[in-house]
Image (cartoon, rainbow, N blue to C red):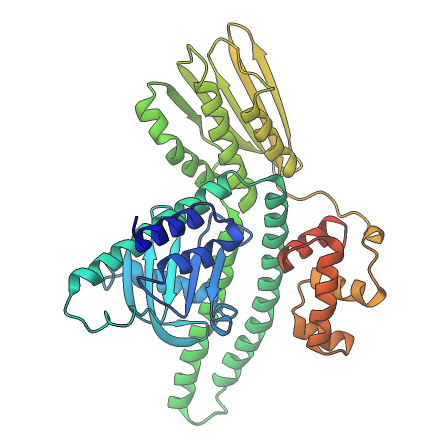
Length: 431
């Protein structure tokens, strides 16, 4: 086997086994021989807590915003795109730069900053080679997006807890930004519309700019809310789409009892987990002999999502089966409950209740971590959503000192990332 073939197989293996946290870096490494880039960003709504996965130039990926990615997605879907790919200039990481964007069947978005073919192919007339490179990029991207979908579908309880903490934190930070900037812009508009200003043209122009900025800010807030909340009817419709293949090819009549259209919106991790739980229950029921009909129903009492799945099989659904145990773990991760009523000869009836809000906060108990006084101060500010610069300012220390304390904190609490440390702090009562 030639060396290029071995390298390709190694890239495929690395990407197909990549963890969620490292999938962007693995994808960048796999595509580098075919198309280089200064930064790579994956944006997927499947991961409610961590919708962005990034690799490359830190000065770019640290500044990428959801608003920038939304604008690129719009360009991808517009007339200038082909539907699944778009190349042009766009703002990414706070600056205008060349980008290449690709979509996927799961609605994930891939963005490459400063895309560049390897030396010797950029100006060649051999278009076949460049087309082949494009096909390899699409191949690796399809593999990565499917890997993300599978990993999220099989996420362990710890991921769901971390996702909920990260989602709540993003809502809090965005709400603060909206309040701050809305007040600023509304004050600006009031001043610019004042009749005391004589330059009408300047006032109209400035008013228009400020109004657009205000609309953009509100749009960003709505967009962030969409990522962490989903109308119950929309979440249920997505479940129907997920189960369509089973309905079409299994011969089983899958019935859906629609939830109230005006029910409370579901937190993103609850909606995602509920769909995964129902899919798992349906597949477990289908494995029984003699099942002809499965009915699934969602309801919402304002505090809980109530899920019911019932079959007309022989009543042989085993609660001890590994697949059922995994579903029970998902339910427990969101502090929910699941009951299974098996009636021999009549079928199985499974009821699941998922609370829409996390349990009431407990008093902080972090004594086992043996944190120093200053480390605890840093962790409390970190758990409150403060960035390194803000923590340094509040504690009157340098950012390098903050980073030093954070490294010690990660080691003592057993966290591998900032997000994980925040989640662990929240789960122990620190806010």
